[in-house]
Amino acid sequence: MNEVISVKHLSVRVAVTVGLTTMLWAPVASAQTPDFSGVWLVAPGGGGPGGKVTQWMRQDPPFTPDGLARFNANKPGKGPRQAPPAFGNDPLGDANPPGLLRTLIYPRPVQIIQLPDRVVQLFEYGHFWRTIWTDGRAVPEDQGPYWYGYSVGTWAGDTLMVQTVGLDARAWLDEWGTPFSDEARITERWRKVDANTVQMTITVDDPRTYAKPWTSDPRTLRLQPKGSPNGEILEVIFAPVDEKEFNERVRNPAGGRGN
Amino acid sequence: MRLAGLVIIVAGLMTGSASGHHGTAVSYDSTKEVTISGKVTEFWWRNPHSALFIDVTDDKGALVNWSVEMSSPGVLLRAGWTRKTFVAGDAISIVVHPSRAGTPVGVCLNPCTVSVNGTALSVREP
Image (cartoon, rainbow over all chains, first blue to last red; front, top):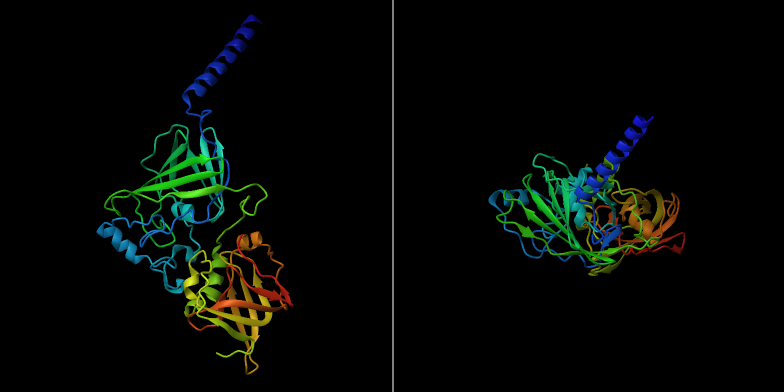
């Protein structure tokens, strides 16, 4: 009997010890960690006008020759180089996923769910989600390609810094056909300005596409109150069957192209 | 193409209407507005964009089926429309920016000015 009690006590001790050790070692969110929970939407005018190259900033990033060639090969339906989509090559025209960066810049609500070891973002645009791991793991070198990349986050005061690798380079960086390569490393900084405001930037480090790393203009997002029009995210799925029919009966005839 | 149910009401008017998910807006002439009137044949409540199809009678009495691109269901739902806002057979009058290619296609995004069976149902994105 005593042996049984001892084993039980030992089990409890081990469990408590393991639990405490986990709590001490795991980089869980502290009391000072900002809370990003809720539904967020870019504020009117909060995205900036963009420049000649990218929606992400006014200044034009310096291309490498290879990056410029891929930029010129992309034929967007929006922005300074826009052409009728009937004659473009936007990957979304065939209902491919927009991918992480294009989703981040598109003005549709994103719901953030914050857990002790991760931050989950649910994007209305395309009905996709991503996980940002905040459990102290290292940024991997061999992940992907993923349309939404592999993301690791760390807390720094009022900011969540996110590093993303393993992005699928068939996606675009924005709606304007701005390219990136599979070597791209993206650093996002999400700063909680006040209870209802977040500012975010991206830094693009992609030596195959850009001669030097560049950081976007800041984007401002506002918390959407529950019950407001954008207070809950809806289903926005681009189904190939719908996209095909839309191309045949609207997009192509609008551009003067037969099917 | 001259159509009995089609009236160019404004030319040279820049409205800066919202662009579509995939940039379809460039296919349309945002400096022109055309009012088309006829009977609804179909209403697509789907992504990437909702769409209305309208039979319009031309000046020779022939029916021409127009396509009208609209915003996505999420945007329209937030503006107060539903999948039941238009049904086949509705008498409709709608203001569109026409296709630059001259085809019977237009776009009605934000704001979208439309009346159905004599009732105004215009929407503006919230």
